[in-house]
Each structure stands twice: as structure tokens, then as C-alpha cells.
Length: 571
Image (cartoon, rainbow, N blue to C red; front, side):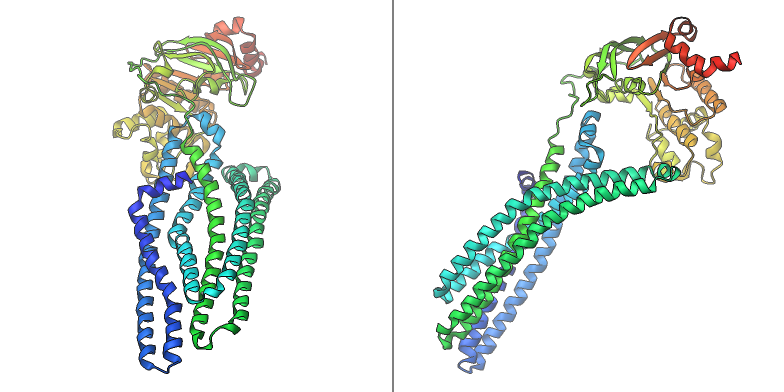
């Protein structure tokens, strides 16, 4: 709740303005039964048209004032809640940008999506409701009960009994409902995770005709969310009618006791019944508000968990600014992912000289991608050090470090927009000449020219309207536009045919001679012509040297060579 109050304080003027108009609206509602009692007891009883017209006019004027208050309250309540929702989402999004991969891995992308959408919506609805209903309830309760006591004080014992019973029921409702609504949000996380996984992998699902398995997985997640919702709503379904029953019984008792009421003051009795109805409405709203509050508190804790999350990687207090040339050194580096006992990398030591092209090869799961992810400081090593030009990367300015590095990941990631916009992700102010040079080196110029709109061709989300090879070539071009000092190619030519791959690598050799290039590949033909080759297996270095040196003294490299090329030569 502290988080919600913090955001409300930022917009306290608009919030209080909404509360002011809400008060005007509520007081206008409260006065209506009293004026009606005057019409009955003074006008109808005495057959006085003047009294009827007087209080009738007052009632109309009060109703108009209340309507104006309701309109203004809605305007300010909506504006405040929407602004708070916008700020909260922006701050969550900004916070996520500062988190390291370790934090993201722990919080999970599907859960973060739920928090930035559904959880913020729950909080936003609660804040809006608090300005529309929550503040109205105590005013109605206190006002209606006070007016009942003033007009019919003999009904006070009945009121006290109703309030006590309703209070107990409301407390039980909140106590039982809070944990259930919290579990609903967790189940919603799982539902979003399954949905996201299916939608991003729909081509694979259809290719393997695995729709039935995915339907079962979705049904399980959806069923879990439905069961959690039913459990939470069951509490509401039990206690809301009980509260309504309590107040309605109170109204019946008041009617039974009305036999003792002075017949000349029937208008006061009518007013009391109206006020009891308003109390009934208010108590019903309390149940609704508390359920909304329970959801909002559960959601606020989840949002607060993100906003208070400490980045796993600490920024240096006095960052070192260096002129990065491209030298990379690993010194006895070990790394383990959170929650795993087996190191992904173990005691890694080697040095890459500026301008060298290093091929990295090894079986799946050998730690190749993990190794290069330490260089831009996506993760920090568990033990040992990673140095760039002699400076430990945790002490180097992170923006400076990453500006000098371009990464082309295993999975080509493109964004909705034009080809040109995607390419200029690497460098927003890239000239036309720089763009053309990059797409030529990446061998993307020919297929881009084949599109009617050329560089202005629009890509769908993820670049689904391109082939795998086209996406990889655009990703390489995007990285080259930056003219980085260190270029990391993480098995990003796997979708290219051998001749296109060779042409791309040749272009890199000619145009990127001053870059330090780390080239990960599963193909020995891709890495054998690099300056040196790093052979990895089970998170350890098995060999580091030229192709010829490794063929002589590295059994792991020999096995890869024999499986891919040796057999062909022997045949």
C-alpha cells in the first residue's frame, strides 16, 4: 500500500479535487431523504402546496449540484488514475532496462509482462475506485447513521447490531480473500508464460503437429487460473450476500418497530428506511472495495518487487574511461547460472589480441555463448576476471564498453518497422553510405534491392516476413554499422548456405580488419580460416591455437574435424 500512496502523493492536488467533488455529490445524495421527509411531514400532512414546492425545488437544486459533483469527480478521478498508471508502467519499464540478465532470468519475462500490464491495471482501477467509491462509503455510512439517529434515535440499538455483524463479516472476507487473490496473480503469470511461448513458437508447433500437446498445456494453465479465480470469488460470493442479508434484516426489524412510530412523522420513517438502504449500499461497496484493495495490494507488492530489485551487476562508483582497442583477456574465469551447481564455464584463461579473428567451436552446451556474454558484461563471472585492454570490465564505464561492442545473437532479432529503421538501431545517425557498406558486407544488398520498397520495406514483429538467412544478414549489417571495436558473431550464419557464408566472412575480413572478431560456429569450415580457434567442451577450454596446431594436439578439435570434414576427405 505504501507504493500506491507514494504515487497518489505525486498527484495529491487532482486526487483531493476529485475527493472534494465526491463529497459534494455524496452530501447531495444524503440530503434527499431528509427533504423528502419534510415534503411528507410538512407538505403532504398539512396539505401545503407551498411546502411541497419549496422542498421539491430544494431537492431538484441539490440533485443538480450532486450531478455536477459526479461529473467533475469522474473527470478528475479518471485523469489521476490514468496518469498514475502511465507513470507506474514507465518506471517499471525503465527499471527493467537497468536490470542485468541475472535479474531478468529470476523474475521471468512472462511475469514481468503481467506486472507491467495486469498488475498496474489492478492498482489503477483501485485508485480510480477510491476516488469514485471508497471515499464515498464512509461519508454515506457516517452521514446516514447520524441522520437516522437524529430523526429516529430509538433505532440506534438496531443500527449498532447491524454494524457489528457487518464489520465481522467484512473482516473475515478480507482475511480469507487476500491470499486467494495473490494466488490468482501467480496463476496469471503461468497463463501468460504458456500463451507467450505458444505464440512465439507457433511455427514449430504446427510443424510438429503438436497442437494437441499445447492445448493440454494451455488448458492446464487456464484451468489453474480459473480454479484460483473461483476460489477467490467464492469468498466474495459467500460474504456479500451475508452482508446484504444482515442489513435487509435490519430494515425489516425497523419496519416491525415502526408500529410505535408517531403516524404524524411517517416522513421520518421513510427517510430512515432510505438511509438504511444507503447504508446497505455502502456496506456492499465496502466488500467490493476491500476485494479491490486486496487485489491492488497483492499487485503492488509484485510491482514493488520489480521497482526495488537491485541490479545483480553493480555499476562502478568511479568508472574507468579507456580507449578500447579490442584486446580481451580471461583470467581463471568461472561462471555459474543462478540455481545451478554445475559451472557453465570453469577456469577459463586466454587472451585475444586487437584486430584478431577468433573462431570458437564446440558441442552444444559447451559454454560458447556464455563465454561471449561475459564480454559486454551481460553477466559477471562467479570467479576470476574478464579484462578489456587491461581493465577489468566491472570497473569500465558500461555505456562506453557496450558502445564499443556489437553482438549478433544466435536468434536473429528484428523489430517491427522498416529495414532502414532496424539497421539504424546500430547507429541512429548512420549515413546512407554507411548503411550501403554494411548491407554489402553482410550480402544483404541483393535481396533488399529485390523488394519494391527497398530499405523502406516494412517488417512485421520479429521479421516474420523474411527468411531465416535474410534475418541473419540484416542482423549482421545492423552490427557492422556501428563500426565496433569488438564484434561478436554468435553462430549467426547458421541459416546461410556455404557460399553466402564464405562471402560474408570474406567481406568481414576485408572491411573489418581493425575489429576484434569472435566468431562462434558449429561448422569447422567456418572457423578453420580464422587467426586462431578456441575449442570448448563442458565449459572448459580444450585447445587454443591455429587450425593446424589444434589438429595436431587437441583431441576434441580432431574429433569435430573428423566428424565434419575428415570423413569426406577420406571418402
